[in-house]
Length: 355
Image 1 (cartoon, rainbow, N blue to C red):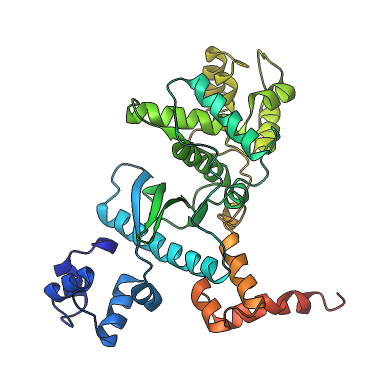
Image 2: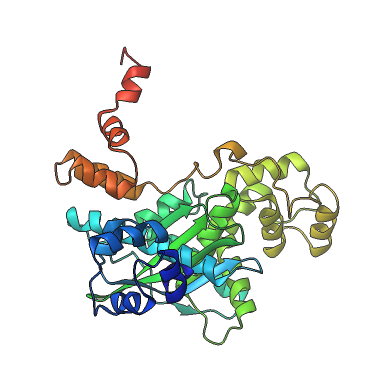
């Protein structure tokens, strides 16, 4: 079941308040738990009472984890449960504001891709359809949220780097794509993960092995974040050598990892295979495991390019009187006092009394 518990294990965690058979009936809708049992379930599962009471019939499908080896089924189940609860809250505020949160600006139906050239072309087609030109993307998270995808940036188990899935509701035929990335990863890696997962939403994997599908999605991500035409303007169409400071400047322009940048330069023929090998043996020898001059300070990990739309919608509803302070606090999972301060701007007023 959700959260990685078996029925028997969950019954044991509830200290005998209810039997495994009864829990099974709750899941199937054959019985309704008492308020005491609901409180106990909420505590053990780490979810809110609203999640247990106000389910919108949401389930995750096509869950595709990007994980290191050793990820347990319990890790996955608990992450999936957290995502479902978050999506429940997200859809609640969208319904209150009468927003259609079940559609995203999908460029087209997934396309069959079999070559790297086709992956490059697909990335360019997405940029053209979304009318974002070929300049570097300043905020990848904001772009995807603007186009209707749900993005969740949270602390995940160390072994889980992120995943993509589809949210299905019983009363809606449209599947909603959700991308979840690990807050503990660098900004460079999170941006690449978002672009990679966007590729998975747009590429038809039919006929591709899992390994080839990952390669094609990686190529799409590199092309989407570092368009060939723009990169050639910055670097030139062919280079015999590049130095450390130039590479760091380029990674800052495109906000990607140093390693991803070097691979991209090789992929589009700006540098040769032998030059790529030389770079990874010299000035970039540690870049595959240690990011050079990270864009986001480690002490602020996960704060740059964070997903803000859900929070913004909650304060929209609160300002318009469509939800109460307690409801906003429940949706945002924070104290009412903080919600009030954020709405009124009391912190900023105290810090800037003359404004």
